[in-house]
Length: 303
Image (cartoon, rainbow, N blue to C red; front, side, top):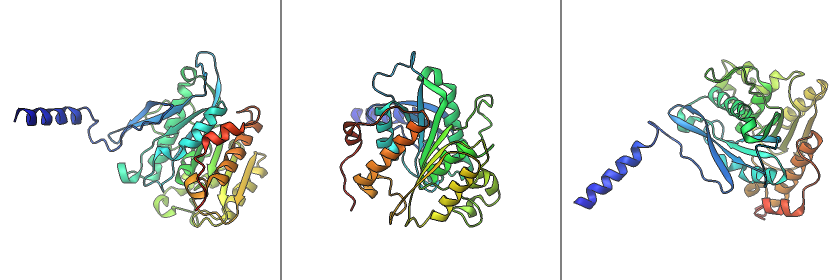
């Protein structure tokens, strides 16, 4: 009986340490440190930070990237981009995985997803000095709905969380997007969920000369994001005089950028092209080594 009471007491103490109504748990990624950037809907939202080897925040001022996972604004895991983050950290960027609220866990809408994305960018910029980051070289990256969140941080005006410090910009300086949701218009993805404010939240419909340089990866057999949408985005960006790369992968479906789905050959090609893009805009220097590339891959072949 004494042992049973002790066990019950321990469980009660453990539960009491969790935030009321918490729906997410802190992840553990080898080589990354965790920081809470926001508390919302009863949850602590974390950033998982991968630093380059030998990074000295007191002396360094490196470029950074914040990654947002995909999952249709409904779910997903911060681990989706851990390979990309670890690789870019090995190349010299501070690479960060961001959690954000989703419908399955916090009963939120795409509006809150974007608000959290902007909060994450704002937190990183606000803490740039402590993190050893250049506040003018902070990129956002993401896949699918996470690509939408990332694109919104660089393109969409407003939709910030009112609780944030509005004197600190939440705008991404560059974008790396993987089969991104960036058209929320009447013919675009998810319009029924944002129909009352789609013009505000759709990146494709908010492009202007302040939009950041962007690289996009898309499979030609993606059933959610049409190639015509990607080409229209690129053409609009180029007409505005903004650097915009589009890399199409023949016969690849949605989500092909994950090594587990597209295979190691495509995954490594995407890393090389992402790397080259960041070199051209001054976020990275030199060329990656085969050792760095091989370390990023699990060697998984496409099924």
